Length: 472
Ligand SMILES: NC(=O)c1ccc[n+]([C@@H]2O[C@H](COP(=O)([O-])OP(=O)(O)OC[C@H]3O[C@@H](n4cnc5c(N)ncnc54)[C@H](O)[C@@H]3O)[C@@H](O)[C@H]2O)c1
Image (tube, rainbow, N blue to C red):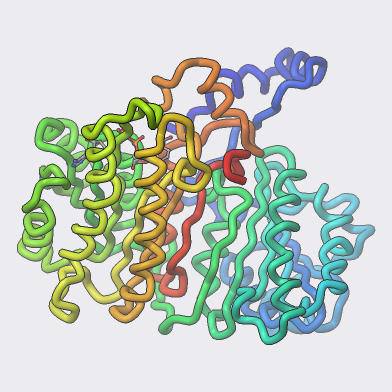
């Protein structure tokens, strides 16, 4: 499944590299993807921070739990935080940076309370950005701008987005950059997000901002089987991204209930059978589908822990030629069904089919963020899906549950294989990683949101797009 496209394979041969350099073609590198038994971070971690930050301790604690080798600058506060977390961090100086490569470089920017202090970023990353390893990670940690204590701090923290996204565009060789905003009180919720972003599970997530907030105590979990004992519903599971989601959630320990339309029962049975799951056929737009799904989950499994709204369709036409059927079907499948099924699963609050600590993940699209030619219906539906996340996050928080969305960019599927060659090549290359993503890349982001350890992660829409130029 984890296959680079033909151009990427060609450009990574000696002759291909020569031609690429002479002609100035994009130079995608084969991305590393996670498989069972891999280390949580691929290489040494360099930890830095602005003076007065509040995340040095929690960060050092997570890195210690990853079992990674670490370095930190010769600043007393950072070294003390590392030592207190039991992290044996070797010293780092700008001179050391000239030789060492880092699997991850993480900077706690929460100490930055006014714009003048943003220069801390340049001072730290200036000598280190070129030391980020192939497929390495750059992560900046900040304070959620709306939760800061002064206008200057809010402005400075908001500025981190521009820094991180721009740094992401300067990274080479499959490396990525992300910003994590941690609200005051959310310091103990950082581990699942860092484990995802520092690992090869996030290989096609680039230039993203994730918000982590306060939540209940993080349960102790086996990080190799984070979804053990969980029941997950995946709609549109018989092929493409849905089949990858089903396989990934099952790999992480969940029992997957796959759902698809009755004509695809054979494919659905094969996909779910191969991963020890079960299935249910339904057209999610049917009037009785939400009740049928809720009753099935209650009867067969006593409820559901994870719901992935993945089923989706496209019916493209420019707006002047858009007929009722195209418009209505796309809104019905991609948006209305998501809301109706969610409502059915949370109805009755304490008696809801969605179990306590439930996780809902929606599949949006960059077309819902940037818009796309010929896709007014699809773009509307996928922006509406982000609206579902915004509207339901506070409702679900009261039930102790979360809701987030992934917004895939160009993913190599049967759907994108049908796009005409020139448009397809443009879509595939116009991102910081110069290649399309794979269905598993979307699935890994969903697995992160679905984790019992991600209780502080809600209301986010994370693009899985290799930092696509579209809607950037
Ligand atoms: N492929 C991409 O590049 C890409 C990019 C952005 C977003 N997405 C989104 O990712 C999701 C999966 O896309 P894919 O490329 O795997 O598509 P796909 O067409 O291969 O799979 C979609 C699945 O949804 C099912 N489905 C459609 N209508 C249904 C209905 N009424 N009831 C039940 N099931 C129904 C289909 O039968 C199919 O199995 C979709 O929501 C899509 O919009 C895909």
